[in-house]
Length: 365
Ligand SMILES: [Zn+2]
Image (cartoon, rainbow, N blue to C red; front, side):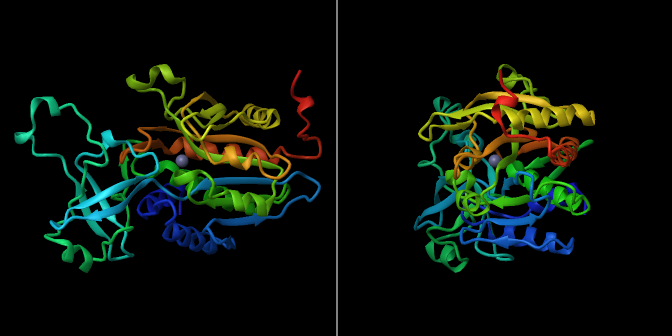
């Protein structure tokens, strides 16, 4: 399977935060077919450990399997369904969206988040965004009993209707590119590293609950206790008119690194990458003739912000692929960026040899 095949397959599997099991099983089976064994933990994190030179620092590279969505909060007597958000769901992007109620493989229930009939919409409501408390989903049920018979109950996970569409010539659109694209890249990397043993010990991990609380990875970081951590996820593409002031990240312009991330709303966390990790990525890109874009800013947060605090401290960096329209049901990525990302990661691991050091003083003045 190509990276593109894997991405499209992964985007077709629902995996709300805390309910990643179908995604996890798919990835475990996929890796098993390539002769790569995996392990899992009580939270549902999945990983494979590829032993390397024991004298080199160990590396954990991870991407999250989960996606944002909703949970059923209440079923109305009319059969309409009230939802609560799980993760950073943009209310503005919800009207007229398709969703599925994740009841079980082969039994998932299709539904929609309706848009009020336009003919009955007052002028002052035309430009108003509804709060989640106001919206509801319609799955075709006539009453509560219909919903119950279909297996839809309070607590049922709900996600954007899964699926991917190709856009000419290299682009993919659909929900949960964040971070199934990262997962697809890690699968490709795992296959390449099998025939590349002259490298440090590498743990490739597919993690849980990132969109929920950013901490599902924490027990796994404790277990693996890596010296270095590389988190793989989206980088906000800024090459659309509405994003132009946010940075200089071009879709199709190659992978990127984050030099600064911070999220002040409640969580108060972020990542200022270790200078050795920045140098490693920059030197690797230069040596391999690969483009490497840069991102810095506030409003983004990844689970690396918690991994870096593991044990006595972990040298970390966020590396990723440009993506447009984050957290909507129509995210967009470019397959060439993902291919280049895999090449960058493999070449980066190859550069971690006896001369490599995590001593900050070797990189800072
Ligand atoms: Zn993500």
